[in-house]
Amino acid sequence: MSAESPVAVRRPQRADARRNFDALLAAARESFAEQGTDASLEDIARRAGVGIGTLYRNFPTRQDLFETVYIGEIEQLCQTAEDVAGLPPWDALASWLHRFVAYVATKRAIYEALNRDSAMFRTCREEIYRVGEPLMARAQQAGAVRTDVTFDDTVRMISGLMSAGYRDEAQRDRILQVALDGLKRH
Image (cartoon, rainbow, N blue to C red; front, side, top):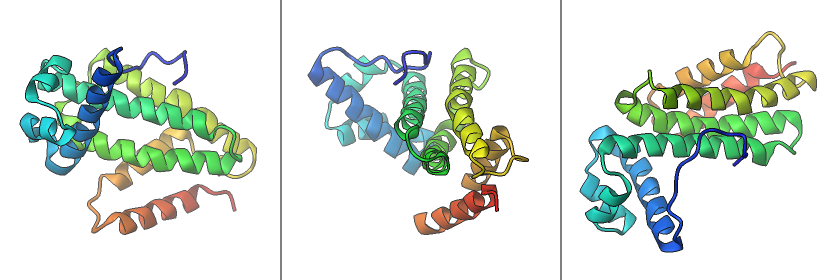
């Protein structure tokens, strides 16, 4: 993750504690995606292979867990921007937007539990734009993406499309591809 990012999950220093922490985040992300914000904390701990005490030691409140899962998604989204930066402009943007879809799914699962007026939420949004806008601008400058579309337009389009219910991932991926095709400059 870039040193300039103000968004970061504070992970434990010890390797075993960090593994438990990361397992809890992964389990929480999956549980929230499947069951929403009412997912059982006991089930999350069990899915992570730890005791409920370990969950509460890392996340004293359910809200702490929601926010940490959300920030973790932002971290991964920012890391993806760094990872794809060396790809050709269209490939970089499309790869990042595919990762953005996973972020939207997690955000949708816990959206109501997040304080959207908080500084943390605003900072996370700013980070999305900080890493995504250059990918879009680079693709536009290379002639790969329409110039009449802004990054904000793209974020809103993808977010809106991903808020719909889909029969399966294949259908979701087809719809995403239609949207990506619409961004391309022909």
